[in-house]
Image 1 (cartoon, rainbow, N blue to C red):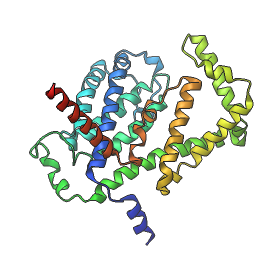
Image 2: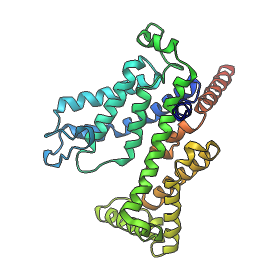
Image 3: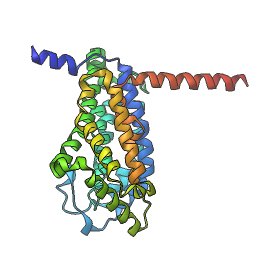
Image 4: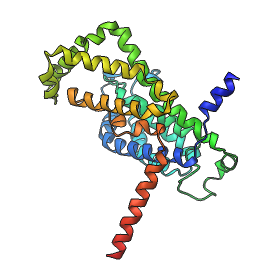
Length: 310
């Protein structure tokens, strides 16, 4: 009985357009992100071997990859991303794009600095790439999708619910684990605010020394422990209460608003940008994302009619 309840919860019915909307919007975000990060990826063509500290899936590396391998991977990234976003030949391009993005971002994180801002996006791309996220709103003909036609013809609304639920579970788990890490590393001393204040002071000092941008707002607040205590408590409650968003649907928008506000606060106080959640794309699985796509299509069509009229 309990397993049936878990299955019903995990595979709650959803329209294919909802999952497709998450694919499209996540794909658009990732394409823009990849275009901006392309120069950083290309710098990996000739990295300093002594800086190599392989992490994650590439922890087996003993030396940098051949320049040709890196160049081919960077060149292939955007076309695969376009195919992923458009849903073209998704049975192959979906997993391929997710794997390539994971490989390149992991490789970049293997040279001195781990970019935690990309972890959630990588995980979500993997889920989308392995799901039937292109059974609606895709580019191509039925012939080009023949490899997946048998799966699509037998799909039910429950088949589109589990990827969305999995995305939500992963998102919640990331925040919940962050809260546990605060307790493990700082204990209840975290709520006093001193740890957070020290983090912001250290971040600002380090950035000043290397000539990087730092937040004058964060610096101005130093020396006001009450403010940092309030922010510390709020951040810890937000992270530890994240599972509520999974089980109480009416509270999910409230939690998402809190998570977005948390990242906005980090941007203001430390100039650390988490673009994936700040754009709201990271939280699409909690909402009826297809409505947003429908609205954008409606606006586009209306503007086209106005242009034609002119």
